[in-house]
Image (cartoon, rainbow, N blue to C red):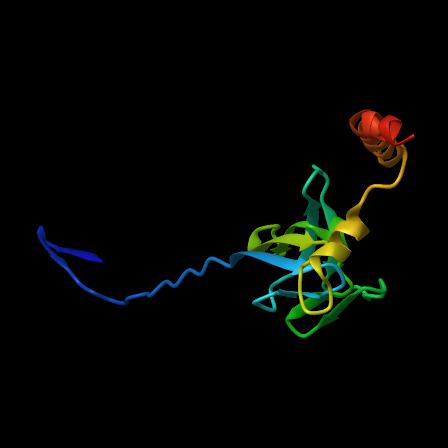
Length: 158
């Protein structure tokens, strides 16, 4: 504050303010079936919106004051929980205040499989193997290659 007493200016310190800014942006990687806990961080959080990886559309998942009864979604305190994650749950989750300003952001990747104690690499390959025309075409190609490579040997035996 500047005080001008007959052009004898002086500065007077009245009050100080300390501003603390936190960036609540994170990246998470979870597996199919697991649970995502979205922290609201403040009672001023009014809604959670979702945008899938390959989408331009925003979907409102939760709004303060509205009943949450969507099966996999539940809100308790300052946490919105999304249970039973699926591959298509991957994307960006934004917690917004009443003015639509971002309070926090989570970028979620949902992984289909992870090699662990209960699942071997062979099981993953078998479970992820495509089924359809490409599988049959690949099998036919392998059979043709086998016949071409071993036909001279087979003719020699008979």
